[in-house]
Image (cartoon, rainbow, N blue to C red; front, side):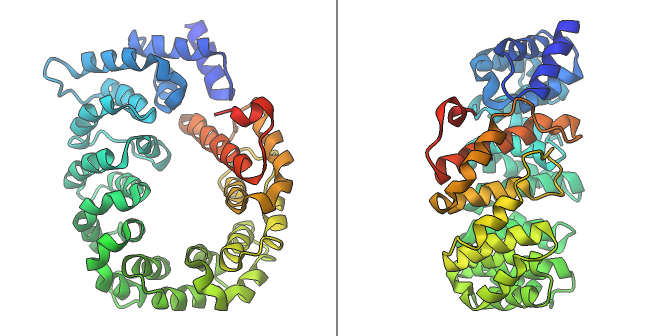
Length: 374
């Protein structure tokens, strides 16, 4: 047990643990050691345990029972681990879990499943939506996954539109916008939310609804009006991401957006810098703002827009080449992000290192081994 504890500590704390530590975690789970810490680490492992995929699959089938219908904790752990590496052998178990409330109940863990092909994942989520009812956690994570599937989530349009009548409307608006033209039949509902005419509309709904209306209809007028008004009124951080998506169509708001790069709020500054670049194509004012938001000592605290700033620097690409040494230095660190989310620490750090790696590949030529880190 002491060896297992040391192995789990290593994979949770270190970005590049000895592969034998992951071997010990897989051994513990597949040999039924009943270690919740090993279970939690395996769920987050993703490609790090891909070499054990056959063994995990065999263990999953054993746990599913003779008829392949069991849906307990042991099935969840193994199915999610396979899904995290994009292994389609997770799908039969996920179908069973979808009908019995056995999906992750928080957004970071739910995103594990997004490693599967979107079309296959949507088929599973359609089953899940029929069973979700009004359970807050189930709807939230289902809609999160559907949003990540983008246009592939088109078969779920009717189910998602039904959530506009519930407390999950904000997430439903995001999904419909991500689906795009295939959700054009919801345009009237989206316009009603954007204009505040729907009795369920709240302040947080109108901007996302206006953006979604543009995405499904192709007509930017409503989005430009609603989101531009938000930016001019001082609630800039709530309209800036949508103006960024509109890009050059939002040129009339460029000066206001530029002014918001000097906002006292870190998230607003980052959103404004990115939006200004998207609208104008001018990276010169944006890059220093984004660079200043990249704290090399960041622990993963979501109150700080560090990962967002790294992602946006990567999107800007070569004009942000001066960021490369900073990003490379952060990626070289051996310790994972240390923010106090025990059950999602590996997920959070892996997401950050992917963002760093992708940004480095875009802003300039990578250097040596560090550029190849997962």
